[in-house]
Image (cartoon, rainbow, N blue to C red; front, side, top):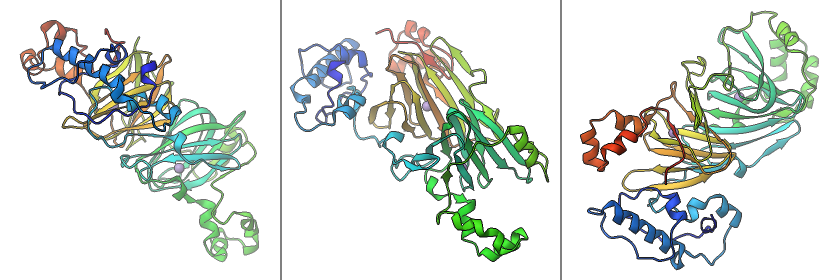
Amino acid sequence: MTDRTDPATPPPRREPAGFAPSRRGLLGAGAAGLGLAASSAALSSAALAQSRASTEAGMAGASATNPGPQNVPLGTMLPDSGMPPVSDHGSVKQFWSSMSLAHRRIQRGGWARQVNVTDFPISKDIAGVNMRLEAGGIRELHWHAADEWAIMLTGTARITALDYDGSPFVKDVKAGDLWYFPQGLPHSIQGLGPDGCEFLLVFDDGTFSEDDTKLISDWLIHTPREVVAKNFGVGVDALKPFDAIPPEGRYIFPAPLPPALAQDAAAMTASHPMSKIDFAFGLTDMKPTKEDANGSIRVVDSRNFTISRNVAAAYVVVKPGAMRSLHWHQNADEWQFWISGKGRMTLFANHSDARTIDFNPSDVGYAPATLPHYIENTGTEDLVYLEMFKAPVYQDVSLNNWIAALPPELVKQHLGLSDATLAAIPKDNLGIVPPGKG
Ligand code: MN
Ligand code: MN
């Protein structure tokens, strides 16, 4: 990997069309350079291989040196930016961001950070928030104008909500569980013992900001005190405790651990029975939608998690060397959150433009609807990431599946592949393919 850790920026260039991504070819490139290949039109596969090797040798040589200032840690994390595959070309809108870049709003009781369209302009459909609550720490009772989908990353929490009939909901959620609170429904989250929790929130609106939700305390201290007293049927003096509320509300704050779940549930049903809606879902408890030696995919959308009416998700595990195969999504942009391991994605953006970017835990990726991509595990551990969509159902088109569903002669006229190659292509959708054969 030594020739790939230099974050040098090669000079602009235009490669012949038809170059296949070649990580291994780049790694194995020799020192001798023959210069760039000429027209692609009539190149044999042997000529393509030779021109690719010579191009890569040239890139690794004098033309790609970068003697000026460098951010070495960043370059090491993003090797495909400094030394792109020769198939990359042109300008593709930035589709990489990271929670680790975001400002952390740290308060007593926990913290929050977010990536939304303000800092990540491509992300028009979805905003993401990463939050930590200490044991007992509360994310204040609130609501907002976007739908909220969430996954618990570590630890446990108690969530509450109120449904459309005014019936309450309460549940304790653990790592791998989801919840979904539609627009306008009030809810809360409280960290439980022993060490609270950390979770990811996904909102179906790229402009959503966690700093702009409706907080119960913020609202009530900005309503005439006598109006609140009249609403509650008490004297104004009973609202003296409001004086201790910070001017912008509490947002996240420390508190003692709540009582047992059954005790809270009993107290909550004084006027209405428990909600019939289950706002939570055991994602990692569910049987994978597809699983084999190369990894697994769990698809959760409104078909199996009914309340998740406008967010579809895929929780994907890719084994080392394996790859979420070439595909695109018909119905919505894909917003990714990278949970563990490392990998890379190439986004093809029409008219010869393509870019490859590497991803690490806490990174956020984006693939606009219809733009094809893959996710390759480039590390030594399992790669785990989320594909999130602002859509009621998950949809994708798999290249392998498409090719299998075409007349073989039609495919051969386009790509020149042999019958043996066509026969070797995996036929199934939602594919994760094994490590390459070189
Ligand atoms: Mn919320
Ligand atoms: Mn995808």
